[in-house]
Each structure stands twice: as C-alpha cells, then as structure tokens.
Length: 99
Length: 334
Image 1: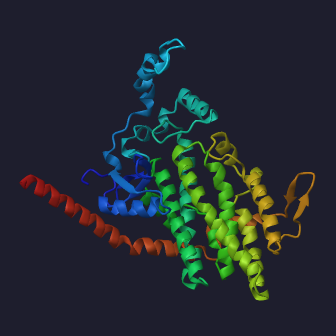
Image 2: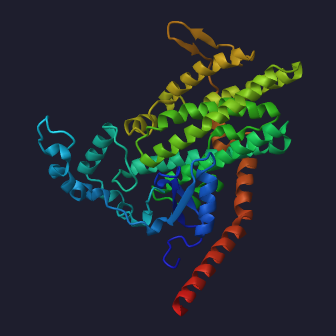
C-alpha cells in the first residue's frame, strides 16, 4: 500500500464469524496478513479452533468507516427523543386484544 | 482490532497537551462507574501507556511461554499427550495474537512490540526463564503456571479497557483445559511408580516458588498497583491474587499426595487462609532483569524465529502487491 505508514508490516484485517447457520456474522477479532486468502487462513487458525464458526468474513481494518465516539451524543440523540417510535407510547384499552 | 485503524485516531496526533482537567475528570467518572473504555475514546496518556506496557507484556508472556513447552512436544510420552500438548502450545500462540491485537488498538504496532521484546526493552513473565527439565515439568506448568495465570486473568475480564477485557474472556474460556491437562499429568505421575512420583514432587519443588512469584511484587512494593486499581486496569492486588492461588492449590497438591515445598505453610483458622513462607524477592528481581537460568536462550529462540521468518513475510507481501497490481491492470483493460 503506497500510503501505508508501515509498509513492511502485514496489514490488519478484521474477522467476522458466523457461529451457526441462521445467525449473522459477528466481529471476533483481528489478524495480520498480506492478503485476503492468508487473512482467512489466519482467522481460521486463530478464532475457530473450537468449532466457533461455519463461515468467516475478513476485511481490511483500514476499509472500515466508523462513527466518532466523541460525537455519540448528537449522533444517537434522535433515537432517544422520539419515544413515539416505540409501541408502548400508544395507549390502548385493556379489552382490545391482538394489537 | 475491533474496527480501529489507529492512523484515524485524532488523539494520537495531539499528545499530552490536550489533557484538560475536564477531560480527565470525565474519564475517571466513566471508569469509576464501571464503564468500558474503547480504543477511540479519549483517555489520559498515562492510562494508554500503562495498558500498552501491561497488555504487551502479557502477550509476550504467551508467546515466550510456547518455548519451554514446545521443548517437550517431540518427547511427549504418548500420542494422546503429544496431541494435547500441541493443542495447548497452539492456544498460547492464539492468546498472544488476541493480546497483541488488543494492544495495537492503543496505537502501537505488533512489530514495534516485537522489537521491544527482542531488544530486551520489554519484559515477559519471569516464570518462562526457568528450564523444563523433565516431563513432569509440563504437568507442573499446566497445573501451576496456567493456574496462576487463570487466577490473574479471571478478574481482568472486567478490566476497564474493552479490547483487553474481551481478549481475556476468550483466553479464560480456553485456558481451563490447560490447567486440567497439567493436573492430570501430575495426578498420573503421583499414582505411578516411586520414580514417577519423585519426578512429580521434584517438578513441584522447582515450580512452586516461581509460580507464586508470578503475581508480582508484594502490594507495599508495587508502585503501579494503586493507580492501576483506581483505573480498574487491575481489579485485585498482587497479594490478594497470590493468597487465592495458594488457598486453592495447596489442597489440590495434598489430594494427589504431593508436598508443597514450604516449611512455613499452614492453615490459619483465624484468617481463613493459608499462611505461607517468605518469598525470595531477590531471586524474582534477578530473573526480571534477565538473569533467569535460560533467559538468553528464550530471547534468542524468539529472535531467531523472527529473523529466519523475515523472507517469508517479505515474499508474501511482494506476492500480494503483484496480485493487486495485476488485478488493477485487468480492470483497466476490461
């Protein structure tokens, strides 16, 4: 990578594992690898030594775009102030069923 | 690790100048409230430095710890024991990786941490500077050394730095097999011939004191403990953990007919704990300084492996670069 601060080091990859079919992939940790194929192998050896998964995704850490924890307040504030997005906001008499 | 590319962290470029009292107070309040601190959150530089030191030492201990046990893989007494030992040593490599990844989120690369280990600047657990002379040593290491490590690591699952805590959860899940396989080796040897039992006792004699030294210097001589406890990096002090370890391990030794090599060891009814004899801290500090029986051999084995593997790492990078440029060319022509 041309703009890599440490060009002689294997870059970092994030590892996501599906524990079993029917569940989504979940972040497990990270590995160093020169390319995706080797990242997958290292992820298998590092994070699935005890049947922890049936599928692995790897992605270059530098390709992940993350929200800013310093801005967590304003970023997530609308969710807190809009209580009418939750069913419990609405009053329905007890004798009304199946709603 | 944990979606944290450190080149994108603005705090790392500012340095300590940005440590306003308000930021420090807000940080300390979060820690006091048992919140987890994540890599991109603001943190005092001293907290970051303490964590890098502690986590990287922990990681170094995992991978240097592979060496004394690796020494016995080819000489394990049965195929079952060999398979178990291989799996354990592989686990230790994995534990090193989890920990290096956690430390990397603080802005220090793994290669930088390796350099510190190889140059002797960074420390690892003193226990690995003792030699593994007999097969019983593999039993003693699993039972005592991994047992002490578990005692240390269980409270660290609630340490205040999120990536460290998560790494500890994984490590603790995997570690209990290590301790049990070690105890099983000791138990079988103790139930064996007179010579086998003597071998087990000899291993206990040599590993007992180094194991209880693993918890570090006593609280009144451990300058970093108070701050680390306040920041919830450490959840229990060295002496508290050491006492717990002694209390659970002594009955285990007795149950398989082995004697803990401490003439002053006795149950203290009033305290509800075992009293144990004085620890030779001069030996501890000598081993910390690299004067352990096999300290030089350990660092040399590590450095050799790293240097002899350099061409593989370089070739893999060159291959990846070539593949990437070929894909780019194909895309341009396509």
